[in-house]
Image (cartoon, rainbow, N blue to C red; front, side, top):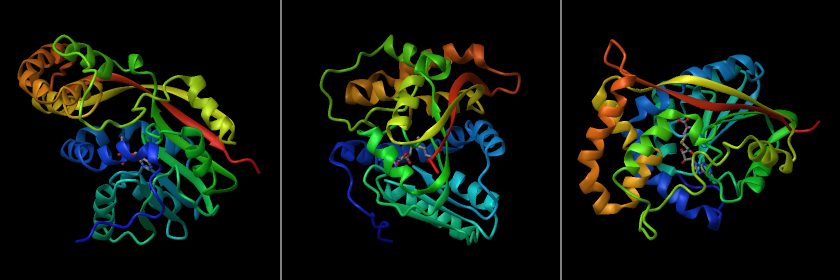
Length: 296
Ligand SMILES: C[S@@+](CC[C@H](N)C(=O)[O-])C[C@H]1O[C@@H](n2cnc3c(N)ncnc32)[C@H](O)[C@@H]1O
């Protein structure tokens, strides 16, 4: 089946990150989906419970990935409402469409778009993103574009990582990998641009939203247990697939691959302290739950 068509162009500054998210990162996210998506279920549910979309409302989900949250939004607004999932990756969107179709969900649609260049109509009551707004090369124009999708008075709700150091699951994993590898000055791998922690600094996170014209910006800190894996193998595999430790290996190319087995062993040692009685591996992590509004 042909991949879904993209509406609008990819911003030149986003080409590398968009390519990474449609190739290697798509494949790794998909392989470890139960970990990456499952670990964020609790904080997502909390945000949607505290600050839900209005019944019958129209939602847009930015950087929606496989569309799990788009489907949640569709369920929350009910059959009179609607949820549009958007993502820059045609492969994520193809899967999102297939899964929503298979479940027979009538009030969702999915489109491929770079949020930074998308020209959405201001028809939505509620814009949402879980971990989808950290990768823009020009975050202020990108957030202005997302604001452009909202009606006057419309709400923005999003989840993003706090600083890497605030999440031991990421920071300590990277520290272990750093015992074996350094970041190469030159590499061939595509990176995901500013990266997952680019909004970790609260002033940066707030400042971007205010510069993009949002008002009533609120950041709520949320620390939580992050299920790294249901067993040690899954935990090590997931953390060596995505995240700062995994990226260090990937950027080192063949040299990184050669060192992977020793790194995996060292990580399993490190995670031993995080092991629960049922064998699962659980670390600590921290996100911002962000709320803002498009002025009336
Ligand atoms: C960490 S994943 C999160 C996926 C999903 N929201 C979830 O929580 O499972 C980041 C997503 O942002 C998307 N993304 C990255 N840059 C983007 C851009 N410029 N415009 C739209 N989506 C983008 C990626 O393709 C990827 O699906």
